Image: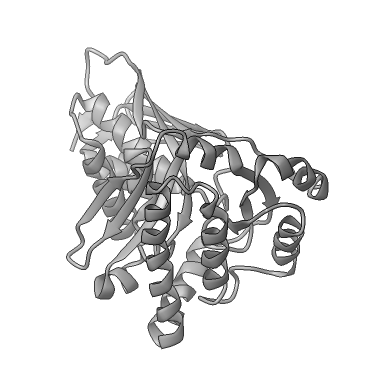
Length: 335
């Protein structure tokens, strides 16, 4: 049995510039961190032939090509496994519409576990790259590249997306205590809503491609990545809120569906009760909102948003990992 543990991510600034429609022309960048909310994938040798897959539903098939779950089907193809395994997955938060990159965390964790099951080593950057290949190329998802690399590598990083398809990661370097102060100021709430990130991202790619103003907004969001990096390097933890606010105002300009009346109301209430900035996580429309709030004002914020569910979290430093490794004496049937 193999069990992988892969974090979700929180993107601070630059989201959307990791879409191919943008970075292939201008290059993109995000500043993000992995957090202590995880997706777990278990891969086990199956006694019977075939494949058993358990997620929100159960599939039992004779061969990998018969699987309906497109990410698992592609992951098995990528790793060369066709039969003889049982795969299960669980997550710490709802997998649909979270805005924390849960599908990409699942894909990274799936590949990590499947390769470990085969006895093959893959670096974290390899896992990020191959997860992109599974989701974007093999499954045709209209998403970006930040989630896969953030989940694979872990930590607080600037992730850059280059026109030649290469990706580079640079950890944030800051004076002692700065990152801990940023973390202590963050407060997250679940606002609900069931939205399709893919549809919003598809529309965003079309809108940015057709509008110079929207492309300029995204260009400014990329600039904020380096502004925030430099502020953290100076030890200015409280600059995070102001930069988050600037990024949110720009993001709302990119396409319809990112915000709505309920989201705007939550944001305005937070800003009136201690928050210095915040954002909706992910493509838009629902999921989770995060705010930067000085600790002295956090009780005011919690009272004002008492109707919402707060979700405590910490930053993660490790990225994807194999937390249980007990290989079978037999291997799954390769292609």
